[in-house]
Image (cartoon, rainbow, N blue to C red; front, side):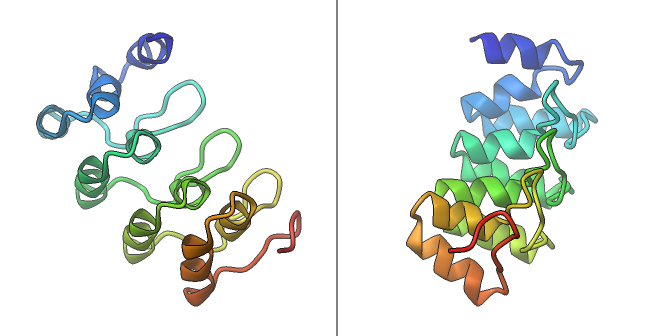
Length: 142
């Protein structure tokens, strides 16, 4: 609840609440009314980040199709692909890579998405990222 209050107070209308609630129709309506799909909260996270975190793949697809930046980094320099890897969400990782996500983007600790997949023991996502050129960052070697 506090997260929703913080997010909705950031000037991004109520897209944050709609994303967190998994309300695809409301998110679509927000986009059609001109809301910025790359609006950031106080931590630099976008609606795309929250759709991945809250496991709403239909909203993730919608945001990507409507031009959400798949390489945007939040305040700790994690991209949406870092998050998908950390969660072991291979279908989302696939979607993000097809949309142009950088497979070896570095976060603030010089970790790559592969590092996050390995570190959280998501073997399928680890294998997928390796098959698509994923490398370990300098902060971690699997």
